[in-house]
Length: 179
Image 1 (cartoon, helix red, strand yellow):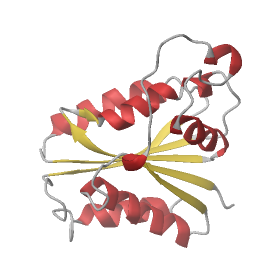
Image 2 (spheres, rainbow, N blue to C red):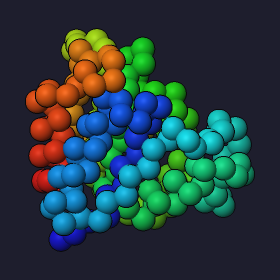
Image 3 (cartoon, helix red, strand yellow):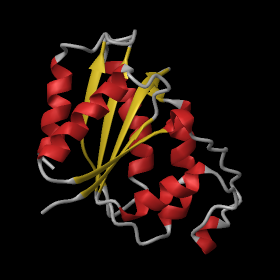
Image 4 (cartoon, rainbow, N blue to C red):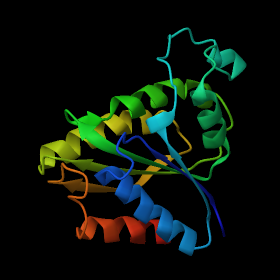
């Protein structure tokens, strides 16, 4: 069964290491016959959540910016894929701001069930992997019908292009192909 896959990359470096993981995941998902859309946050305007909780009643945020369109696409996707560089043992600020702004989805009849995380860090340690996953999972567990279906962590990559030739690109491709 073909699925609607939404990939959201939060790297400001369009050919950065986490963006490359997303590209490979996308290639695999497309080859498997899925409908795939790729959104990069590098050119999006997304304001901070105000914590007003109006969205819990209206299912729409009071702030009108690019997060509205992204949340709408997330609502109708079967699979969500997030790609992010790791900053200080967590997802990038760009991604965290978007996740906070996804609050209207919490009380909606969202379609997604499978969530994937692709992340790259300069540090290659279990701490970088575990702490990033723990923080991200805090968002995932709020969506009771969904779960973290898989992830690919690539540590030890810092500069653009460091990931080239790394086996983690192949893992991201295979993960996308398995959807």
